[in-house]
Image (tube, rainbow, N blue to C red):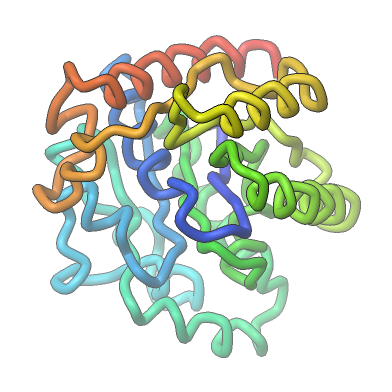
Length: 256
């Protein structure tokens, strides 16, 4: 059965989508069966996987409101070697449409249950807000991967996110836990980055992944080619870091 992970952070621009896409491709490169669920109306994870959000016959929006089944809406990312449940701007309307639907926070969970046996990993790219979409992601997941930059404001937002996860765990999803914190866009030359990194290790211990994702131009260039970074330039430092992160994830789920 699939292990389901939400990639979440209420702060925008912290590398959630980059992490989701590259972890999916890296896990696939390690022989894992992966489904990526794009829960962000911007659809960046969809496009970054080489799937055109503008021509997708159906998306996660139709799945959430009950017009389509997940099994008929997923598409193959030929570039990444994994399946994608795509998203586009239609998804922005899901907040309103879900209001009248019963058990609205568990719509995605119910759909994932129908395909869980077909995958080893399901990765959910959550939007940068605590919306009904993010709540669907958290209610579906066994754990949360938190990508974060090592800077002061990232620490500020982290406590809010941890409290949110605790509330969802208490009220809606007893399986939910923090799997780990991933340091991204890391600049080892920055004293502040080193200090924040050390603080994270002190407070969260082994919840902080050993893998560290450096700032990397090749990772930033990859989406414009419709490719995950680990496929676009496997030798790049960022790609190598994500491949190492995938190995660490495979090992970590054996103990959680």
